Length: 140
Image 1 (cartoon, rainbow, N blue to C red):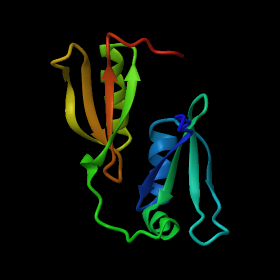
Image 2: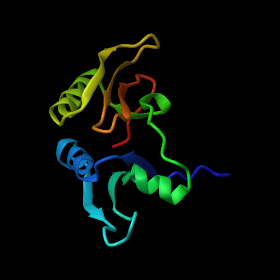
Image 3: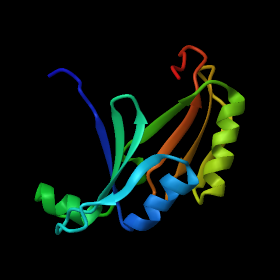
């Protein structure tokens, strides 16, 4: 299997609240919620970078579509890494997401491996790491 990941979908409890967080609070580009005319179809997509989108979709709809019973969520199942170009940018992004309503779970700090990072949770508890890695360049 060749890795061709084009969409990361987050299950959410309140689609409108999550739309406001990502669109208004973080400034992610979107056409808004589409598919409302279909049962279990309402979803919003956000353009992240070339060839990659973030989707938010109701947890109940994901459970329905996958035929897997909905279970309690755990924020430590995975994290989304948002890489930035400097320590200052880590601090700036964490201030922005806090203003948007995110919970800062780990303030920005120097890491044991030589980088700088902090974590936040979105309104549904998904964990994001904002990280500067001096070994990785950032493509704009």
